Image (cartoon, rainbow, N blue to C red; front, side):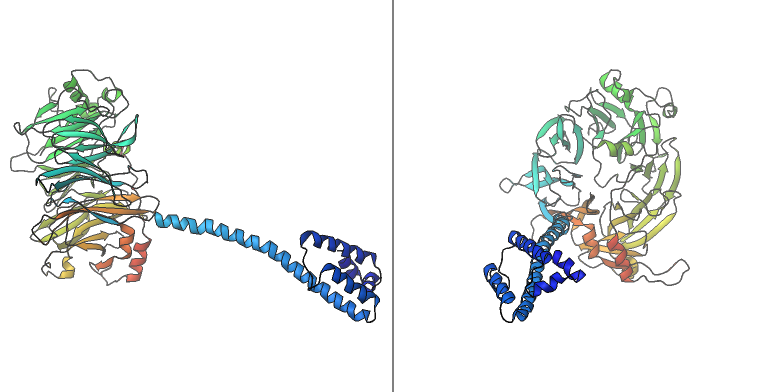
Length: 622
Protein backbone atom coordinates (compact mmCIF):
# COMPACT_ATOMS: atom_id res chain seq x y z
CA UNK A 1 0.00 0.00 0.00
CA UNK A 2 2.89 2.33 0.80
CA UNK A 3 4.45 1.61 -2.59
CA UNK A 4 1.17 2.46 -4.31
CA UNK A 5 0.93 5.70 -2.34
CA UNK A 6 4.51 6.56 -3.23
CA UNK A 7 3.91 5.96 -6.93
CA UNK A 8 0.68 7.95 -6.87
CA UNK A 9 2.38 10.96 -5.33
CA UNK A 10 5.53 10.55 -7.48
CA UNK A 11 7.67 10.60 -4.39
CA UNK A 12 11.45 10.19 -4.70
CA UNK A 13 11.17 6.95 -2.89
CA UNK A 14 10.01 5.12 -6.00
CA UNK A 15 12.88 6.35 -8.20
CA UNK A 16 15.35 5.68 -5.46
CA UNK A 17 14.10 2.17 -5.13
CA UNK A 18 14.76 1.51 -8.78
CA UNK A 19 18.36 2.75 -8.38
CA UNK A 20 18.96 0.84 -5.27
CA UNK A 21 18.51 3.83 -2.97
CA UNK A 22 16.78 3.44 0.36
CA UNK A 23 13.19 4.56 0.53
CA UNK A 24 11.41 3.99 3.86
CA UNK A 25 7.93 3.74 2.31
CA UNK A 26 8.97 1.27 -0.34
CA UNK A 27 11.05 -0.68 2.09
CA UNK A 28 8.19 -0.90 4.54
CA UNK A 29 5.83 -2.02 1.81
CA UNK A 30 8.25 -4.65 0.59
CA UNK A 31 8.67 -6.02 4.06
CA UNK A 32 4.89 -6.14 4.59
CA UNK A 33 4.34 -7.87 1.29
CA UNK A 34 7.10 -10.36 1.98
CA UNK A 35 5.59 -11.20 5.33
CA UNK A 36 2.13 -11.49 3.79
CA UNK A 37 3.46 -13.71 1.05
CA UNK A 38 5.12 -15.94 3.59
CA UNK A 39 1.80 -16.26 5.42
CA UNK A 40 -0.43 -16.78 2.40
CA UNK A 41 1.56 -18.62 -0.23
CA UNK A 42 5.17 -19.66 -0.10
CA UNK A 43 5.89 -20.36 -3.73
CA UNK A 44 8.85 -19.56 -6.05
CA UNK A 45 8.49 -16.28 -7.92
CA UNK A 46 9.49 -16.24 -11.54
CA UNK A 47 11.29 -19.53 -11.11
CA UNK A 48 13.55 -18.22 -8.26
CA UNK A 49 13.53 -18.94 -4.60
CA UNK A 50 13.53 -16.11 -2.02
CA UNK A 51 17.32 -16.32 -1.41
CA UNK A 52 18.10 -16.26 -5.11
CA UNK A 53 15.76 -13.34 -5.64
CA UNK A 54 17.41 -11.35 -2.89
CA UNK A 55 20.83 -12.13 -4.39
CA UNK A 56 19.75 -10.81 -7.81
CA UNK A 57 18.37 -7.70 -6.15
CA UNK A 58 21.67 -7.05 -4.43
CA UNK A 59 23.57 -7.54 -7.69
CA UNK A 60 21.18 -5.26 -9.54
CA UNK A 61 21.52 -2.47 -7.00
CA UNK A 62 25.27 -2.55 -6.48
CA UNK A 63 26.87 -3.90 -9.66
CA UNK A 64 27.55 -2.71 -13.19
CA UNK A 65 24.37 -2.31 -15.31
CA UNK A 66 22.18 -1.84 -12.26
CA UNK A 67 19.64 0.22 -14.13
CA UNK A 68 18.84 -2.58 -16.58
CA UNK A 69 18.63 -5.10 -13.83
CA UNK A 70 16.36 -2.74 -11.91
CA UNK A 71 13.99 -2.61 -14.81
CA UNK A 72 14.05 -6.38 -15.06
CA UNK A 73 13.41 -6.60 -11.33
CA UNK A 74 10.40 -4.28 -11.64
CA UNK A 75 8.99 -6.38 -14.46
CA UNK A 76 9.52 -9.50 -12.38
CA UNK A 77 7.80 -7.81 -9.46
CA UNK A 78 4.85 -6.82 -11.64
CA UNK A 79 4.63 -10.33 -13.03
CA UNK A 80 4.79 -11.71 -9.52
CA UNK A 81 1.94 -9.45 -8.47
CA UNK A 82 -0.18 -10.60 -11.42
CA UNK A 83 0.43 -14.24 -10.54
CA UNK A 84 -0.37 -13.59 -6.93
CA UNK A 85 -3.62 -11.80 -7.81
CA UNK A 86 -4.57 -14.60 -10.17
CA UNK A 87 -3.99 -17.18 -7.47
CA UNK A 88 -5.94 -15.16 -4.96
CA UNK A 89 -8.80 -14.80 -7.44
CA UNK A 90 -8.72 -18.52 -8.09
CA UNK A 91 -8.87 -19.25 -4.37
CA UNK A 92 -11.92 -16.99 -4.15
CA UNK A 93 -13.71 -18.06 -7.31
CA UNK A 94 -13.27 -21.84 -7.07
CA UNK A 95 -15.19 -22.17 -3.76
CA UNK A 96 -17.79 -19.71 -5.04
CA UNK A 97 -18.36 -21.74 -8.21
CA UNK A 98 -18.55 -24.94 -6.16
CA UNK A 99 -21.13 -23.32 -3.86
CA UNK A 100 -23.18 -22.16 -6.83
CA UNK A 101 -23.11 -25.63 -8.35
CA UNK A 102 -24.24 -27.08 -5.04
CA UNK A 103 -27.13 -24.61 -4.86
CA UNK A 104 -28.15 -25.43 -8.42
CA UNK A 105 -28.01 -29.13 -7.61
CA UNK A 106 -30.26 -28.67 -4.58
CA UNK A 107 -32.63 -26.27 -6.30
CA UNK A 108 -33.12 -28.02 -9.63
CA UNK A 109 -31.73 -31.52 -9.86
CA UNK A 110 -33.22 -32.92 -6.64
CA UNK A 111 -36.76 -31.54 -7.22
CA UNK A 112 -36.66 -32.79 -10.80
CA UNK A 113 -35.79 -36.23 -9.53
CA UNK A 114 -38.72 -36.09 -7.12
CA UNK A 115 -40.90 -34.90 -9.96
CA UNK A 116 -39.93 -37.94 -11.99
CA UNK A 117 -40.76 -40.20 -9.09
CA UNK A 118 -44.01 -38.35 -8.45
CA UNK A 119 -45.42 -38.63 -11.95
CA UNK A 120 -48.88 -40.08 -12.21
CA UNK A 121 -48.41 -43.85 -12.50
CA UNK A 122 -49.69 -45.86 -15.44
CA UNK A 123 -50.05 -49.60 -15.26
CA UNK A 124 -52.16 -52.55 -16.32
CA UNK A 125 -52.78 -55.74 -14.36
CA UNK A 126 -54.81 -58.92 -14.86
CA UNK A 127 -56.79 -59.95 -11.78
CA UNK A 128 -59.04 -62.98 -11.97
CA UNK A 129 -61.56 -64.14 -14.54
CA UNK A 130 -63.43 -61.79 -16.84
CA UNK A 131 -66.84 -62.45 -15.32
CA UNK A 132 -68.85 -61.22 -18.32
CA UNK A 133 -70.19 -57.67 -18.31
CA UNK A 134 -71.28 -57.61 -14.67
CA UNK A 135 -69.44 -54.74 -12.98
CA UNK A 136 -67.35 -55.88 -10.02
CA UNK A 137 -67.07 -54.08 -6.71
CA UNK A 138 -64.66 -51.14 -7.08
CA UNK A 139 -63.55 -48.48 -4.60
CA UNK A 140 -60.73 -45.97 -4.24
CA UNK A 141 -59.00 -44.98 -1.01
CA UNK A 142 -55.43 -44.19 0.03
CA UNK A 143 -54.35 -46.88 2.51
CA UNK A 144 -50.55 -46.88 2.10
CA UNK A 145 -49.99 -43.20 2.92
CA UNK A 146 -48.56 -42.04 -0.43
CA UNK A 147 -51.37 -39.49 -1.03
CA UNK A 148 -52.61 -41.44 -4.05
CA UNK A 149 -55.91 -43.32 -3.86
CA UNK A 150 -55.37 -47.07 -4.07
CA UNK A 151 -57.69 -49.45 -5.90
CA UNK A 152 -59.95 -52.02 -4.23
CA UNK A 153 -61.57 -54.65 -6.38
CA UNK A 154 -63.82 -57.66 -5.99
CA UNK A 155 -62.16 -60.56 -7.85
CA UNK A 156 -63.43 -63.95 -8.97
CA UNK A 157 -60.91 -66.65 -9.87
CA UNK A 158 -60.89 -70.40 -10.52
CA UNK A 159 -59.15 -73.19 -8.68
CA UNK A 160 -57.31 -75.18 -11.37
CA UNK A 161 -57.56 -78.37 -9.35
CA UNK A 162 -61.16 -78.35 -8.18
CA UNK A 163 -62.61 -75.99 -10.85
CA UNK A 164 -64.34 -74.12 -8.03
CA UNK A 165 -64.75 -70.38 -7.93
CA UNK A 166 -62.54 -68.43 -5.55
CA UNK A 167 -63.85 -65.09 -4.36
CA UNK A 168 -61.68 -62.39 -2.87
CA UNK A 169 -61.19 -58.68 -2.34
CA UNK A 170 -57.88 -57.25 -3.52
CA UNK A 171 -56.14 -53.97 -2.65
CA UNK A 172 -53.80 -52.72 -5.38
CA UNK A 173 -51.26 -49.91 -5.06
CA UNK A 174 -52.23 -47.01 -7.31
CA UNK A 175 -48.55 -46.15 -7.84
CA UNK A 176 -47.14 -49.49 -8.95
CA UNK A 177 -50.12 -51.78 -9.56
CA UNK A 178 -48.73 -54.23 -7.01
CA UNK A 179 -51.16 -56.19 -4.82
CA UNK A 180 -51.07 -54.81 -1.27
CA UNK A 181 -53.24 -57.53 0.21
CA UNK A 182 -55.85 -60.11 -0.74
CA UNK A 183 -58.74 -61.25 1.42
CA UNK A 184 -60.41 -64.52 0.45
CA UNK A 185 -64.20 -64.48 0.92
CA UNK A 186 -66.71 -67.28 0.93
CA UNK A 187 -68.94 -65.47 -1.57
CA UNK A 188 -68.73 -62.84 -4.26
CA UNK A 189 -67.99 -59.30 -3.06
CA UNK A 190 -70.80 -56.99 -4.19
CA UNK A 191 -69.58 -53.72 -2.67
CA UNK A 192 -66.38 -52.32 -1.18
CA UNK A 193 -66.48 -49.12 0.87
CA UNK A 194 -63.58 -47.44 2.66
CA UNK A 195 -63.00 -44.49 4.97
CA UNK A 196 -64.72 -45.53 8.20
CA UNK A 197 -62.60 -44.18 11.06
CA UNK A 198 -62.20 -45.58 14.58
CA UNK A 199 -60.60 -43.54 17.32
CA UNK A 200 -58.67 -46.67 18.31
CA UNK A 201 -57.83 -47.67 14.72
CA UNK A 202 -55.41 -45.27 12.96
CA UNK A 203 -55.71 -47.09 9.65
CA UNK A 204 -58.84 -46.55 7.54
CA UNK A 205 -61.46 -49.28 7.81
CA UNK A 206 -62.92 -50.90 4.70
CA UNK A 207 -66.18 -52.83 4.41
CA UNK A 208 -66.37 -55.92 2.19
CA UNK A 209 -70.04 -56.62 1.51
CA UNK A 210 -71.35 -59.90 0.12
CA UNK A 211 -74.85 -61.29 -0.15
CA UNK A 212 -74.88 -62.54 3.44
CA UNK A 213 -71.91 -60.93 5.18
CA UNK A 214 -70.43 -57.54 5.96
CA UNK A 215 -66.78 -57.75 6.99
CA UNK A 216 -64.78 -54.81 8.31
CA UNK A 217 -61.04 -55.05 7.60
CA UNK A 218 -57.97 -52.94 8.23
CA UNK A 219 -57.52 -51.04 4.98
CA UNK A 220 -53.72 -51.14 5.21
CA UNK A 221 -53.28 -54.85 5.94
CA UNK A 222 -56.61 -56.54 5.12
CA UNK A 223 -56.79 -57.93 8.65
CA UNK A 224 -60.35 -58.79 9.72
CA UNK A 225 -61.78 -56.53 12.43
CA UNK A 226 -65.37 -57.78 12.67
CA UNK A 227 -68.02 -59.59 10.61
CA UNK A 228 -71.80 -59.45 10.74
CA UNK A 229 -74.02 -62.10 9.15
CA UNK A 230 -77.27 -61.07 7.45
CA UNK A 231 -79.60 -62.49 4.81
CA UNK A 232 -79.95 -61.20 1.26
CA UNK A 233 -78.11 -57.90 1.51
CA UNK A 234 -79.26 -55.62 -1.30
CA UNK A 235 -77.43 -52.33 -0.75
CA UNK A 236 -74.24 -50.64 0.19
CA UNK A 237 -73.82 -49.48 3.76
CA UNK A 238 -75.13 -46.02 4.62
CA UNK A 239 -72.98 -43.97 7.00
CA UNK A 240 -75.11 -42.70 9.90
CA UNK A 241 -74.35 -40.29 12.72
CA UNK A 242 -73.26 -41.87 15.99
CA UNK A 243 -76.34 -43.57 17.46
CA UNK A 244 -74.75 -45.07 20.59
CA UNK A 245 -72.51 -42.34 21.93
CA UNK A 246 -69.26 -44.25 21.31
CA UNK A 247 -67.84 -41.58 18.92
CA UNK A 248 -67.92 -43.95 15.94
CA UNK A 249 -70.44 -43.52 13.09
CA UNK A 250 -72.91 -46.34 12.75
CA UNK A 251 -74.25 -48.06 9.62
CA UNK A 252 -77.48 -49.04 7.89
CA UNK A 253 -78.05 -51.63 5.14
CA UNK A 254 -81.13 -52.87 3.28
CA UNK A 255 -82.01 -56.54 2.96
CA UNK A 256 -84.68 -58.07 0.77
CA UNK A 257 -85.54 -61.69 1.63
CA UNK A 258 -86.47 -63.73 -1.43
CA UNK A 259 -89.42 -65.40 0.28
CA UNK A 260 -90.94 -62.05 1.21
CA UNK A 261 -90.37 -60.07 -1.94
CA UNK A 262 -91.97 -56.87 -0.76
CA UNK A 263 -90.74 -56.88 2.82
CA UNK A 264 -87.60 -54.83 2.47
CA UNK A 265 -85.83 -54.49 5.83
CA UNK A 266 -83.47 -51.85 7.18
CA UNK A 267 -80.82 -53.03 9.64
CA UNK A 268 -78.77 -50.82 11.99
CA UNK A 269 -75.18 -51.95 12.66
CA UNK A 270 -72.61 -50.70 15.15
CA UNK A 271 -69.69 -49.17 13.28
CA UNK A 272 -67.30 -50.06 16.11
CA UNK A 273 -68.17 -53.72 16.73
CA UNK A 274 -70.41 -54.83 13.85
CA UNK A 275 -73.14 -55.86 16.27
CA UNK A 276 -76.71 -55.36 15.11
CA UNK A 277 -78.52 -52.59 16.95
CA UNK A 278 -81.77 -54.28 17.80
CA UNK A 279 -83.42 -56.26 15.00
CA UNK A 280 -84.10 -55.58 11.30
CA UNK A 281 -87.07 -53.29 10.68
CA UNK A 282 -89.31 -54.62 7.87
CA UNK A 283 -91.43 -52.44 5.59
CA UNK A 284 -94.22 -53.75 3.41
CA UNK A 285 -93.66 -51.80 0.21
CA UNK A 286 -96.31 -51.67 -2.49
CA UNK A 287 -93.91 -50.83 -5.33
CA UNK A 288 -91.74 -52.89 -7.60
CA UNK A 289 -88.71 -52.33 -9.80
CA UNK A 290 -85.19 -51.11 -9.07
CA UNK A 291 -84.12 -50.70 -5.43
CA UNK A 292 -83.69 -47.01 -4.67
CA UNK A 293 -81.26 -46.10 -1.90
CA UNK A 294 -81.18 -46.24 0.97
CA UNK A 295 -79.82 -42.70 1.27
CA UNK A 296 -79.38 -40.51 4.35
CA UNK A 297 -80.81 -36.99 4.28
CA UNK A 298 -80.33 -34.25 6.86
CA UNK A 299 -82.98 -31.52 6.70
CA UNK A 300 -82.44 -27.83 7.32
CA UNK A 301 -83.58 -28.37 10.92
CA UNK A 302 -80.94 -31.05 11.48
CA UNK A 303 -83.34 -34.00 11.48
CA UNK A 304 -82.32 -37.25 9.77
CA UNK A 305 -84.42 -39.25 7.30
CA UNK A 306 -83.73 -42.38 5.27
CA UNK A 307 -84.84 -42.40 1.61
CA UNK A 308 -85.48 -45.80 0.00
CA UNK A 309 -87.99 -47.78 -2.03
CA UNK A 310 -88.74 -50.20 -4.85
CA UNK A 311 -89.78 -48.21 -7.91
CA UNK A 312 -91.20 -45.63 -5.49
CA UNK A 313 -89.19 -43.39 -3.18
CA UNK A 314 -90.23 -43.13 0.45
CA UNK A 315 -88.69 -41.37 3.43
CA UNK A 316 -88.86 -42.37 7.07
CA UNK A 317 -87.33 -40.74 10.13
CA UNK A 318 -84.09 -42.32 11.36
CA UNK A 319 -85.45 -41.73 14.84
CA UNK A 320 -88.47 -43.95 14.09
CA UNK A 321 -86.24 -46.68 12.64
CA UNK A 322 -84.06 -46.66 15.77
CA UNK A 323 -87.05 -46.85 18.11
CA UNK A 324 -88.62 -49.70 16.12
CA UNK A 325 -85.33 -51.61 15.97
CA UNK A 326 -84.29 -51.26 19.62
CA UNK A 327 -87.57 -50.48 21.45
CA UNK A 328 -85.63 -47.68 23.15
CA UNK A 329 -85.71 -43.92 23.03
CA UNK A 330 -82.65 -42.41 21.34
CA UNK A 331 -79.83 -41.31 23.62
CA UNK A 332 -77.84 -39.15 21.20
CA UNK A 333 -78.57 -35.62 20.06
CA UNK A 334 -78.53 -36.74 16.42
CA UNK A 335 -81.83 -38.62 16.83
CA UNK A 336 -83.72 -36.24 19.06
CA UNK A 337 -84.68 -33.67 16.42
CA UNK A 338 -87.79 -33.72 14.27
CA UNK A 339 -88.45 -31.55 11.24
CA UNK A 340 -91.99 -30.07 11.41
CA UNK A 341 -91.97 -29.37 7.67
CA UNK A 342 -91.15 -32.93 6.73
CA UNK A 343 -93.44 -34.42 9.34
CA UNK A 344 -96.25 -32.34 7.86
CA UNK A 345 -95.76 -34.11 4.51
CA UNK A 346 -97.10 -37.39 5.89
CA UNK A 347 -100.45 -38.34 4.37
CA UNK A 348 -101.92 -39.41 7.71
CA UNK A 349 -100.89 -39.16 11.33
CA UNK A 350 -100.65 -42.96 11.52
CA UNK A 351 -98.30 -43.24 8.55
CA UNK A 352 -94.58 -43.48 9.02
CA UNK A 353 -93.79 -42.80 5.38
CA UNK A 354 -93.27 -39.52 3.57
CA UNK A 355 -93.85 -40.01 -0.15
CA UNK A 356 -90.95 -38.55 -2.12
CA UNK A 357 -92.03 -40.06 -5.44
CA UNK A 358 -94.81 -42.53 -6.23
CA UNK A 359 -95.91 -43.64 -9.67
CA UNK A 360 -99.64 -43.26 -10.23
CA UNK A 361 -100.52 -46.37 -12.20
CA UNK A 362 -99.37 -49.87 -12.94
CA UNK A 363 -98.47 -48.80 -16.52
CA UNK A 364 -95.88 -46.86 -15.40
CA UNK A 365 -93.04 -44.85 -14.45
CA UNK A 366 -90.95 -46.61 -11.88
CA UNK A 367 -88.09 -44.67 -10.36
CA UNK A 368 -84.85 -45.78 -12.00
CA UNK A 369 -82.26 -43.60 -10.24
CA UNK A 370 -82.22 -41.21 -7.30
CA UNK A 371 -78.93 -39.49 -6.51
CA UNK A 372 -77.85 -36.43 -4.53
CA UNK A 373 -77.22 -33.33 -6.60
CA UNK A 374 -73.52 -33.12 -5.69
CA UNK A 375 -70.35 -33.76 -7.65
CA UNK A 376 -68.49 -37.00 -7.22
CA UNK A 377 -71.48 -39.11 -6.23
CA UNK A 378 -71.19 -42.37 -8.09
CA UNK A 379 -68.01 -43.32 -9.96
CA UNK A 380 -67.29 -45.63 -7.03
CA UNK A 381 -66.64 -42.80 -4.62
CA UNK A 382 -69.58 -43.77 -2.40
CA UNK A 383 -67.20 -44.13 0.50
CA UNK A 384 -67.61 -43.78 4.23
CA UNK A 385 -65.78 -40.52 4.91
CA UNK A 386 -67.81 -38.06 6.92
CA UNK A 387 -67.20 -34.98 4.74
CA UNK A 388 -68.47 -36.50 1.49
CA UNK A 389 -71.47 -38.05 3.16
CA UNK A 390 -72.33 -34.82 4.96
CA UNK A 391 -72.50 -32.91 1.68
CA UNK A 392 -74.47 -35.64 -0.08
CA UNK A 393 -76.98 -35.83 2.77
CA UNK A 394 -77.84 -32.10 2.52
CA UNK A 395 -78.44 -31.72 -1.19
CA UNK A 396 -81.33 -31.70 -3.62
CA UNK A 397 -81.82 -34.84 -5.73
CA UNK A 398 -81.78 -35.95 -9.33
CA UNK A 399 -84.63 -38.34 -10.09
CA UNK A 400 -84.87 -40.50 -13.22
CA UNK A 401 -88.22 -42.23 -13.65
CA UNK A 402 -90.08 -43.95 -16.40
CA UNK A 403 -86.57 -44.49 -17.84
CA UNK A 404 -87.00 -41.32 -19.92
CA UNK A 405 -87.90 -38.50 -17.51
CA UNK A 406 -85.41 -36.49 -15.56
CA UNK A 407 -86.32 -34.18 -12.66
CA UNK A 408 -84.58 -32.18 -9.96
CA UNK A 409 -86.32 -32.42 -6.58
CA UNK A 410 -85.94 -29.63 -4.03
CA UNK A 411 -85.07 -31.04 -0.65
CA UNK A 412 -86.78 -28.23 1.27
CA UNK A 413 -90.28 -29.04 0.04
CA UNK A 414 -89.89 -32.13 -2.23
CA UNK A 415 -91.25 -30.26 -5.25
CA UNK A 416 -89.90 -30.74 -8.76
CA UNK A 417 -87.71 -27.86 -9.86
CA UNK A 418 -88.03 -28.92 -13.50
CA UNK A 419 -88.63 -32.01 -15.64
CA UNK A 420 -86.90 -33.02 -18.85
CA UNK A 421 -88.19 -35.65 -21.28
CA UNK A 422 -85.72 -37.71 -23.28
CA UNK A 423 -85.17 -41.07 -24.87
CA UNK A 424 -84.67 -43.94 -22.36
CA UNK A 425 -81.67 -43.21 -20.11
CA UNK A 426 -79.63 -46.36 -19.65
CA UNK A 427 -77.12 -45.24 -17.00
CA UNK A 428 -77.01 -42.95 -13.99
CA UNK A 429 -76.60 -39.28 -14.97
CA UNK A 430 -73.22 -37.68 -14.40
CA UNK A 431 -73.00 -34.29 -12.70
CA UNK A 432 -70.55 -31.56 -13.67
CA UNK A 433 -70.20 -27.90 -14.65
CA UNK A 434 -70.58 -27.39 -18.40
CA UNK A 435 -71.42 -23.69 -18.29
CA UNK A 436 -70.20 -21.13 -15.78
CA UNK A 437 -73.40 -20.44 -13.81
CA UNK A 438 -72.20 -22.45 -10.80
CA UNK A 439 -75.12 -24.90 -11.02
CA UNK A 440 -74.41 -28.55 -11.75
CA UNK A 441 -75.38 -29.78 -15.22
CA UNK A 442 -76.30 -33.35 -16.13
CA UNK A 443 -74.64 -35.59 -18.71
CA UNK A 444 -77.03 -38.33 -19.87
CA UNK A 445 -76.72 -41.22 -22.35
CA UNK A 446 -79.34 -43.29 -24.13
CA UNK A 447 -79.08 -45.96 -26.81
CA UNK A 448 -81.46 -47.32 -29.44
CA UNK A 449 -81.15 -48.98 -32.86
CA UNK A 450 -77.37 -49.07 -32.80
CA UNK A 451 -77.02 -45.37 -31.98
CA UNK A 452 -75.94 -43.80 -28.70
CA UNK A 453 -77.11 -40.25 -28.07
CA UNK A 454 -75.38 -38.09 -25.46
CA UNK A 455 -76.74 -34.85 -24.03
CA UNK A 456 -75.84 -32.29 -21.40
CA UNK A 457 -78.86 -30.73 -19.71
CA UNK A 458 -78.60 -27.36 -17.98
CA UNK A 459 -79.13 -27.90 -14.25
CA UNK A 460 -80.70 -24.46 -13.90
CA UNK A 461 -83.44 -24.61 -16.51
CA UNK A 462 -83.34 -28.02 -18.32
CA UNK A 463 -82.06 -26.51 -21.60
CA UNK A 464 -79.95 -28.80 -23.77
CA UNK A 465 -76.42 -27.39 -23.71
CA UNK A 466 -74.73 -30.03 -25.88
CA UNK A 467 -75.69 -33.12 -27.83
CA UNK A 468 -74.03 -35.61 -30.16
CA UNK A 469 -74.63 -39.07 -31.59
CA UNK A 470 -72.29 -42.04 -31.89
CA UNK A 471 -72.25 -45.59 -33.07
CA UNK A 472 -73.41 -47.54 -30.03
CA UNK A 473 -70.46 -49.11 -28.14
CA UNK A 474 -72.69 -51.77 -26.50
CA UNK A 475 -71.64 -50.62 -23.05
CA UNK A 476 -73.77 -49.63 -20.07
CA UNK A 477 -71.20 -47.50 -18.33
CA UNK A 478 -71.56 -44.32 -16.32
CA UNK A 479 -69.63 -41.31 -17.62
CA UNK A 480 -67.26 -39.28 -15.44
CA UNK A 481 -67.01 -35.54 -14.80
CA UNK A 482 -63.69 -34.09 -13.68
CA UNK A 483 -63.13 -30.57 -12.37
CA UNK A 484 -60.46 -28.64 -14.31
CA UNK A 485 -58.31 -25.54 -13.90
CA UNK A 486 -60.79 -23.52 -15.98
CA UNK A 487 -63.49 -23.91 -13.32
CA UNK A 488 -65.58 -26.08 -15.61
CA UNK A 489 -65.72 -29.86 -15.86
CA UNK A 490 -64.29 -32.20 -18.44
CA UNK A 491 -66.57 -35.13 -19.28
CA UNK A 492 -65.23 -38.62 -20.02
CA UNK A 493 -67.41 -41.16 -21.77
CA UNK A 494 -67.10 -44.30 -23.91
CA UNK A 495 -68.54 -44.49 -27.41
CA UNK A 496 -67.68 -45.69 -30.88
CA UNK A 497 -67.30 -43.43 -33.93
CA UNK A 498 -69.33 -40.20 -34.02
CA UNK A 499 -72.15 -40.49 -36.52
CA UNK A 500 -71.10 -37.32 -38.33
CA UNK A 501 -67.61 -38.68 -38.82
CA UNK A 502 -68.67 -42.09 -40.09
CA UNK A 503 -71.58 -40.60 -42.11
CA UNK A 504 -73.83 -43.40 -41.03
CA UNK A 505 -71.47 -46.24 -41.97
CA UNK A 506 -71.67 -49.43 -39.97
CA UNK A 507 -69.24 -49.87 -37.09
CA UNK A 508 -66.16 -51.96 -37.86
CA UNK A 509 -65.77 -55.46 -36.50
CA UNK A 510 -64.57 -56.16 -33.92
CA UNK A 511 -66.21 -53.10 -32.43
CA UNK A 512 -63.62 -50.59 -31.26
CA UNK A 513 -64.62 -48.65 -28.18
CA UNK A 514 -63.13 -45.21 -27.66
CA UNK A 515 -62.71 -43.02 -24.61
CA UNK A 516 -63.54 -39.39 -25.41
CA UNK A 517 -62.88 -36.23 -23.42
CA UNK A 518 -65.21 -33.25 -23.86
CA UNK A 519 -64.42 -29.79 -22.49
CA UNK A 520 -66.91 -26.88 -22.69
CA UNK A 521 -64.23 -24.57 -24.14
CA UNK A 522 -64.38 -26.57 -27.40
CA UNK A 523 -67.89 -28.10 -27.59
CA UNK A 524 -67.38 -29.14 -31.23
CA UNK A 525 -64.11 -30.90 -30.46
CA UNK A 526 -63.56 -34.24 -28.77
CA UNK A 527 -60.21 -35.60 -27.72
CA UNK A 528 -59.90 -39.34 -28.25
CA UNK A 529 -57.73 -40.54 -25.38
CA UNK A 530 -57.60 -44.28 -26.05
CA UNK A 531 -59.36 -47.09 -27.89
CA UNK A 532 -59.78 -50.78 -27.15
CA UNK A 533 -61.67 -53.91 -28.08
CA UNK A 534 -61.98 -54.82 -24.38
CA UNK A 535 -65.37 -54.47 -22.72
CA UNK A 536 -65.04 -51.86 -19.98
CA UNK A 537 -67.51 -52.68 -17.21
CA UNK A 538 -66.77 -50.03 -14.57
CA UNK A 539 -64.53 -47.03 -14.05
CA UNK A 540 -63.48 -44.42 -11.49
CA UNK A 541 -61.40 -41.25 -11.31
CA UNK A 542 -58.55 -40.78 -8.84
CA UNK A 543 -56.94 -37.38 -8.24
CA UNK A 544 -53.25 -36.57 -7.68
CA UNK A 545 -53.23 -33.20 -5.94
CA UNK A 546 -49.47 -32.53 -6.22
CA UNK A 547 -49.29 -33.29 -9.95
CA UNK A 548 -52.62 -31.52 -10.68
CA UNK A 549 -53.50 -34.67 -12.58
CA UNK A 550 -56.03 -37.46 -12.41
CA UNK A 551 -55.90 -41.18 -13.14
CA UNK A 552 -58.72 -42.87 -15.00
CA UNK A 553 -59.18 -46.35 -13.54
CA UNK A 554 -60.98 -48.93 -15.68
CA UNK A 555 -61.95 -52.54 -15.11
CA UNK A 556 -62.47 -54.46 -18.35
CA UNK A 557 -63.21 -57.94 -19.62
CA UNK A 558 -60.65 -59.02 -22.18
CA UNK A 559 -61.55 -61.94 -24.46
CA UNK A 560 -59.04 -64.68 -25.26
CA UNK A 561 -58.53 -66.28 -28.68
CA UNK A 562 -59.17 -69.79 -27.39
CA UNK A 563 -62.05 -71.24 -25.44
CA UNK A 564 -60.55 -70.30 -22.06
CA UNK A 565 -62.37 -67.65 -20.04
CA UNK A 566 -61.16 -64.10 -20.52
CA UNK A 567 -59.28 -62.04 -17.99
CA UNK A 568 -60.35 -59.14 -15.80
CA UNK A 569 -58.01 -56.25 -16.60
CA UNK A 570 -57.46 -53.33 -14.25
CA UNK A 571 -55.81 -50.31 -15.84
CA UNK A 572 -54.63 -46.94 -14.54
CA UNK A 573 -54.11 -44.16 -17.08
CA UNK A 574 -52.83 -40.62 -16.46
CA UNK A 575 -55.22 -38.17 -18.10
CA UNK A 576 -52.59 -35.51 -18.73
CA UNK A 577 -50.31 -38.08 -20.32
CA UNK A 578 -53.20 -39.39 -22.43
CA UNK A 579 -54.04 -35.86 -23.56
CA UNK A 580 -50.54 -35.35 -24.97
CA UNK A 581 -51.13 -38.37 -27.22
CA UNK A 582 -54.83 -37.75 -27.85
CA UNK A 583 -56.34 -37.40 -31.30
CA UNK A 584 -58.65 -34.56 -32.27
CA UNK A 585 -62.16 -35.55 -33.41
CA UNK A 586 -64.24 -32.74 -34.91
CA UNK A 587 -68.01 -32.83 -34.48
CA UNK A 588 -68.73 -29.72 -36.53
CA UNK A 589 -67.26 -26.43 -37.72
CA UNK A 590 -69.76 -23.59 -37.29
CA UNK A 591 -69.66 -20.49 -35.16
CA UNK A 592 -72.45 -18.57 -33.45
CA UNK A 593 -73.28 -16.70 -36.65
CA UNK A 594 -73.46 -19.87 -38.71
CA UNK A 595 -70.21 -19.18 -40.51
CA UNK A 596 -67.43 -21.72 -40.82
CA UNK A 597 -64.71 -21.81 -38.22
CA UNK A 598 -61.94 -24.29 -37.79
CA UNK A 599 -59.75 -24.00 -34.69
CA UNK A 600 -56.24 -25.05 -35.55
CA UNK A 601 -54.82 -28.25 -34.13
CA UNK A 602 -52.05 -26.16 -32.54
CA UNK A 603 -54.59 -24.02 -30.69
CA UNK A 604 -56.55 -27.06 -29.52
CA UNK A 605 -53.50 -29.01 -28.34
CA UNK A 606 -52.10 -25.93 -26.62
CA UNK A 607 -55.30 -25.57 -24.60
CA UNK A 608 -55.60 -29.22 -23.62
CA UNK A 609 -51.94 -29.63 -22.71
CA UNK A 610 -52.20 -26.71 -20.33
CA UNK A 611 -55.30 -28.17 -18.75
CA UNK A 612 -54.90 -29.47 -15.20
CA UNK A 613 -57.29 -31.37 -12.95
CA UNK A 614 -58.33 -30.82 -9.38
CA UNK A 615 -60.68 -32.31 -6.85
CA UNK A 616 -64.08 -30.67 -7.00
CA UNK A 617 -64.87 -28.62 -3.90
CA UNK A 618 -68.24 -29.87 -2.75
CA UNK A 619 -70.59 -27.23 -1.43
CA UNK A 620 -73.70 -27.89 0.56
CA UNK A 621 -77.00 -26.15 -0.01
CA UNK A 622 -77.85 -25.75 3.66
